[in-house]
Image 1 (cartoon, rainbow, N blue to C red):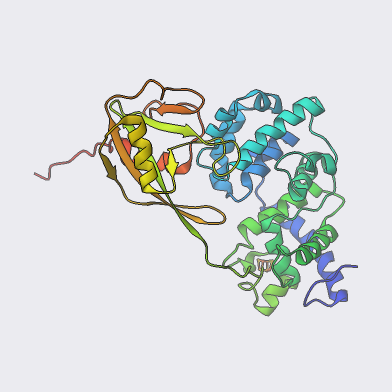
Image 2: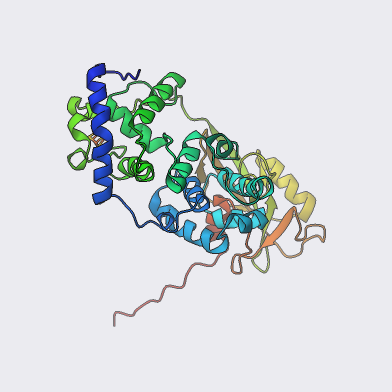
Length: 371
Ligand code: SF4
């Protein structure tokens, strides 16, 4: 039996019965059908798009997806690539664990499944970075298998449409939403339905100010009827976000190259190249002194970066050096990075932004005489 807050069970069944046909009809008439991953549909292409679209908007993903597919047109090419190159093509997209998991999953598909994606939900879910909803979406869209999905967009649509109160990340509420998602998922045209639910959440039932007047399921939507759009989905009670400070050392060689270190594979920015980073200024100065002798330091404005669980305040410590010790040479741990001739490696966002702000010369602005 399915149940949802605020909806009597007889009403619930009619709400479920109305939801799916209305959504499919809307998708066939108005949904997006020309996105790059909607061409030449294969599990590989759908998988890459689903991973890139997690936490990231379609417009941002498109150029990344096109570049990724041009370089890695199939799972075997991706599996054979270096992690540095994969993360290079991910630079700027954020949530780098997605890129690392994509690479590991590709290697498992090649090594354990002979390069063919598994076709069961359990096997698909066992691959790194693929949860139940993503596995369901890949199988539904690429192989027309009937599986419900429940990503962030779909959660928003269902909580509003059925009037489900309670934080959707809570196990009890999530279980209820899975039941509703399952009840709404049709046996036929499941690929279109899957894209339609995600599309509705991304383009109509958006987080703030949903476009209820343009919504195909507005007639029975509890949130619209009761004016609860801004209250649903229920937000998590938030504690104040912790804030951390760190000191990033920009060692700039006289030819403009900047010293980067490779981060450990696990943890924040795992496997990416970053500035040497310290928890205290004194440790940064000590490190500089040990490697480069007495060099003068400069500072620059604090760089703010938001992680999922905390805010980072990164204090740049800038040192320009004329000579460098031979032991700090290009290798697996260090690299002198020349931003004018960028190597194909994955960079953290602060590296990209701070090099642009501090190291690269400003673009020449032509002055036009008014006389
Ligand atoms: Fe979302 Fe409004 Fe549609 Fe309800 S009517 S599902 S709140 S867009």
